[in-house]
Structure formats: C-alpha cells, structure tokens
Length: 160
Image 1: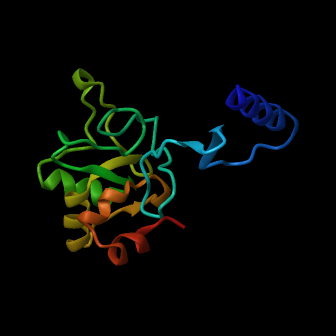
Image 2: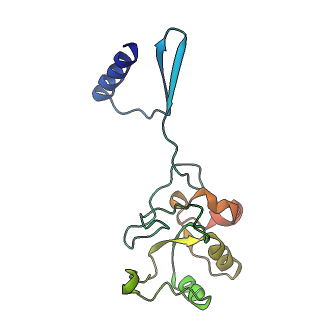
Image 3: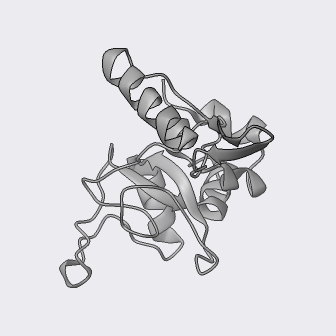
C-alpha cells in the first residue's frame, strides 16, 4: 500500500512542476526492504550521452530506424553517423560500395553530399587513412565506433 501512495505522490508532483530527470527511484515497500527501479539504459553515443537519431530522410541505420544502432548480426558495425560529401562518396564507390546511385528495388534513394548516413566504422577509418573521411555527428555516432576508431581520430571530425 505504501508503494502505491509513493507512486501517486511522485506522479502528482511531476504534474505540478517541471519534469526532473530521474535515473533511479527507490520505493520503500516494508520498513526494512527497498525496491530499486532504474531507468532503462539505452544506447550511448561517443560523448557518453543517449544516442540521438542520425537521419530519417534518407532513412538510415542497420535497423532502418534512423539510429546508428547495431547488434551481433551487423558485421560491418554501422555505427558512425556521417554527413557524406562528394569526396567520400567517390572513395566508397571506388571500394565497391556505391552509395550515390539510387537502388529503387532496395528502396534506397542514393546519397548526395550533405546527407547523413550510418557508415561502417571500418570503412570510415579506411576513408580517414586515405584522406577522404567525412564529418561525423558525435551525438548520433554509437559508442561502439570507439572499438574501431580511437576517439582522438574520430572526434575531431565532429561537424561544426
């Protein structure tokens, strides 16, 4: 009964005041027992913050949900949110991955300079080594990119 009252009180307080971010709430069930309810942790970006969307126009991401998220089936690790440019598009086309040509059969519009896209971390690093890496969007680049690309290389490419 006590836990229901606490939840009702918390809900009433939130309705009257500005929302306050809460990471953990402890609710007393019995005088000597506490139950902890943590806010769910979602994917993080290279800045350690919650992962922001990369693009929905064109729709990008391993899951085609606009986010540079990944799972164990994503061998390419599509986690770097980049603003592609002409130099990168030519570079990746020369490596056998033509991202600029539309493929209607795959519902792929083709990318043009300025579009955002979730790139494979290894391809981005390869482009960096060839002097063709595009700018990145740190807020939308998954922290797993740092397993492939060191932060001192990746973060200076953050768009300004």
